[in-house]
Image (cartoon, rainbow, N blue to C red; front, top):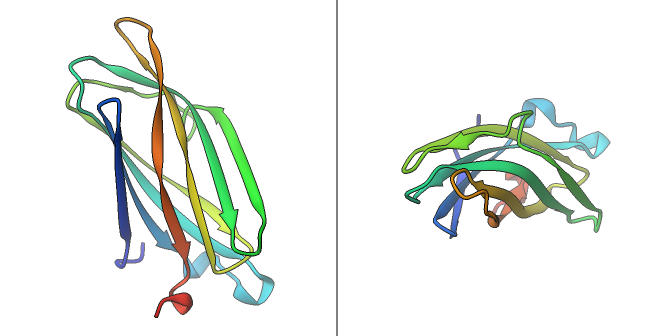
Length: 134
């Protein structure tokens, strides 16, 4: 992955979400308007109780005004349980039709002990090909 990753983070309900994003030139084809980005998400549970990630809801904005919404169970095929003061990390990707875009969203979490559900915000993060950086 590109070493020039940018990090964004946010805390909601004791859950810290850290996002690192990377442009993927080997999987991109600018001539065909295909720009591939990868992102690493770290989810830190700073609560005194275990949580389970049940669902994800993403909003993906492309600078060419295309907008996508992605919703589904878990992340990368799993619904991880994160123990108190531990973390879970995964890598996923997104393709855009332009060199610039952004993503943000929410996770639906559940307190494993009480079964209470709550939303955790995923911070807005920019997706930009290096050719667009000044």
